[in-house]
Image 1 (cartoon, helix red, strand yellow):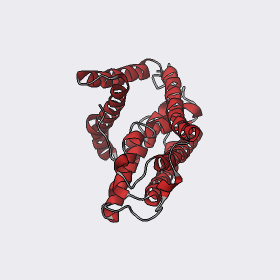
Image 2 (tube, rainbow, N blue to C red):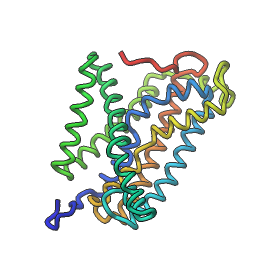
Image 3 (spheres, rainbow, N blue to C red):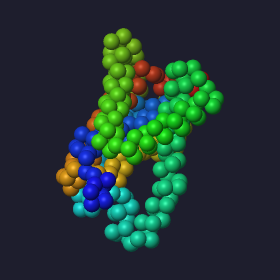
Image 4 (cartoon, one colour):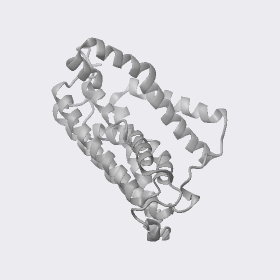
Length: 270
């Protein structure tokens, strides 16, 4: 808190852009591609879904950037709704965000992270839930205690996320795994795939889930330096970085795994 009782503006462009990219590149990008590939059964339509969702997210980021610059206050969408529709609508959004949406998304991300950790370290059962709970508690405590430090931690975590995605690509190139034949046929769906209309609808929802969260940086407007300039830039840079990285990751996913066999089917964590 500042001496005047408000929030300290301690976050710069790097931390704000990391918040955008870090929110979007969460566990979802590792959970959803296999199911999308299985239902669409086409490299072209899989890539098209990610590109469309990237364009939609960029459009949203531009809109949120303008709003955040006009109303540089902590609260994000709550503030925008209050200014547009009045305090009642904003109050309802605030409560559903507090009690339903944000806790639910946080729990889903924490469980997904803990499930992957359990697969790596060979734990199961209550240990997965405990890992998820402790992770949420630690990050929450860090954000409460020191905004500047939490911003630096966020930047490190975001860099690590990008590093993991880049490492997957580097591993594929270094060991020569995968085949361009997995892109053939490029447009046509593989035999046995669901109807394209329904598959596209489900894939768009899954892609939205993977991209979701970039808008939450607007909630930090009260803690960002010069938010009128910083937040629009952070939103655009973050969404562009996420879109380019996700599309690159998906291209190599298709090269590694053929859509004509059962390899793209989701497997439960052990």
